[in-house]
Structure formats: C-alpha cells, structure tokens
Image 1 (spheres, rainbow, N blue to C red):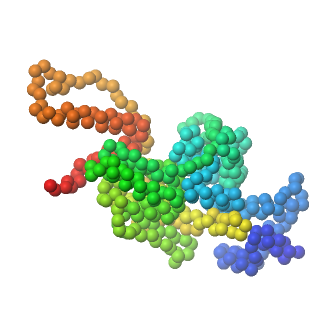
Image 2 (cartoon, rainbow, N blue to C red):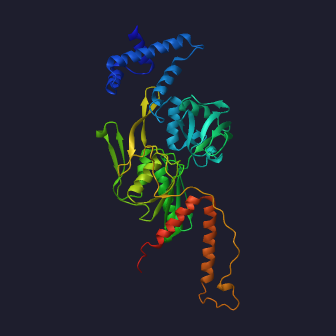
Image 3 (tube, rainbow, N blue to C red):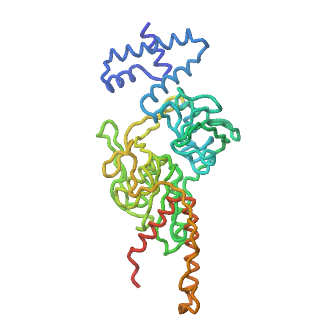
Length: 434
C-alpha cells in the first residue's frame, strides 16, 4: 500500500522515485528511510483530504498547492509557476504584461509592496514601497500564499480593484481603488536637465541596455560637449534580468568584477567582469537609490560604488541579494527557485543589508522662505554700470537656471541634490587646454 501511495505521488508531481529520492537524501541530514516515511505521510494526508474534506477537491489543485507550499516555505522569492504564471513571467521580461504594475513580496502574512512601477495604475494611485496590502476587494489575504494573493489582483483590463493598505505613519488602514491595465514598461526614459543627462531605469528587462545606449546618444546630441555628467535614477526599481544589470554596469566600467553569484556549492561561483569601454566617457555619475531599489538595481549600484565610478545617493536599498533561477518543468510549468546569493565586487553580500549610499539624502518637501526684498548696488541712485554688455544675458540665464533648480527641488529633493553635486564636481574637473 505504501509503495502505491508513493507511486501516485510521483506520477502526480511529474517525478520518478528513482530521480527524486536520492536528491532529497543527499540534500539534508534526513536519512533515506525517513524520507520514504515522510513521503508516505504525504500520501496519507492526500488520501484523507480527498476522502473527507467537506467539498470535493481537484487532484491537480491539491498537488500544485503542496508544491507551492514546499517552495514558499524556503524563502519569500521561491514559488511554483503554473502555466498561466509561467507565460505571464515570460511576457513580463519582454516588457509588456497586464495588471496593476506593482512588485510585491510576502511578509508577516500580508503582501508587501517592494515598488510600484513607473507610469502604471499602482504608481498613479500613490502606492509606496513598504505599504502592506491586507485586503483585496474587502477579502482578507492573511494566510494566503503570495501566488494566491497575486492571482486575486489579476483580472480583465479596465476592471477596478480595491486594495486595503496599511502604511507606516498612517493611523488607520485606508482603501485605494485601481483600474487594471495592460502594462507596457518603457524600462528606460531620459531627459536633459540643462547641461546634465538624467536617465531613469524603471525595471531591468530585455529592452534595458539598448534603451540606455539610445538615451545616452540622444542626450549627447542635445547637450553637446558642455555635458557635465549623468544622474542614473534607480529609485523604486524592483530589479529584473541579471544579464541586463550586468550590461548596464559594464556600460560605465572599463574593467574589474561587476558581481559574483555564489550557490550552495561555492565551487560553482560565477563571476562577471567588465569589458573596456565607458558610454559616459568618464563623466561624473550620481546613482539615486531608495528602499524600493532591489535586486538588479542593487547590483548596478554596488558595482559602481565599489569601483568608485559613481556616487550613490539617497536612502538604503531594499536588500534583496538572492538569485532566482527559472527551472522549466514538464507541462509548460516552472519553478522559481532561489539558487545563489549576489556579492558586490568587494565581496559584500547584498542580502538584507542592501546598498548603503555614500551620501544619505532622505526625500523631503522643500518650501521657499519669503524674505523682504533686498537692495543691491544696482538699485542705488547714480551707481556705476558694468561695462560688460553681456552681463544682462548672463544674469537672465542664471535666473532661468535658478528657477528651474527651485522647481526641481520642490518636486524631487533627492534629484535636486544629485544635480547640484554633478555641477559641483564639474567645477573642479580638468579643463581642456586650448
């Protein structure tokens, strides 16, 4: 009877006993006999549920729930991907998918927001890193697995969903209504900030590195040789593809290690190194991070920080330093399994610690202080005039720049500080000899 149950278990999960059990025996201190006993226990529980649960249950749902429970018990990022989840994950990495545009994990029984993705329903609704989602359309999610909660948030495009949020600093939970949409992620967007290039990477997908190359080329054409530096904004970037994080880091490094991934068997450690060539051609770089910057974002920030190629500014990053490998399985399903840890070039683990900025700059709200208008020499009767006829043009240009800087500071204090630092560094940069 026991052998029969084991055979049923093996067939239902798509495994063969001859392959599965030795791996289990080698991976822990549990003896082979104990492993067989536990698998028999699983078969007993499976039969009891099938026979006595108050409602009829589906074999496939039970087995998938058991597999997912096994994986989610390991860490928050390992999970089972059924056919729909697997297909959606593949679309996600290509840069287009349906949903709310929110990167989440599970913590303390609730769904925790890692980061809302730029220009998506989640970002427009004001969701913030660190928010906890406790109810979906009034239904509590405590006790559900992450995949189950995410499944509840999925639905038809243009349909509404109500999330109940707990946020630090708020005295009571509050509801937010979002409209599901087809999410097309433009992973790189760029604009000029006077004589500085600004690049925001919202997620690392297959389009990221090519988008970065185009952005830098376009900004160089717009600004010209007066370009003073780059601000690389990785705030609220939840990560993505490892190879794209490596390519983005390599874009600004001439040599040296970018990141290493170390599995349980350290003999299989992989190291990724930079190749010659710097797209920024040595210009100063400021990288902005915050507690919504995770995984691939932390790889880029850590590599540029350790090689002193960029100044990291903002607040400490999320601290997701683990590698997830997608392992396809028969039936167009897959496992997302944590297989290694990330280490920065200096050998520091990102896990839990995150990337600590070189300069801590919390986000802040800036207000101008009204002061009495002061008089200057130019206001005095009979004052001598400056003989330089270009002084008015210079003054007007300075006023325009000051107005633009004040506007940025009021909207985004961290970005304002980054732009100021780039200009400060540029003041002391070697000047070309005529």
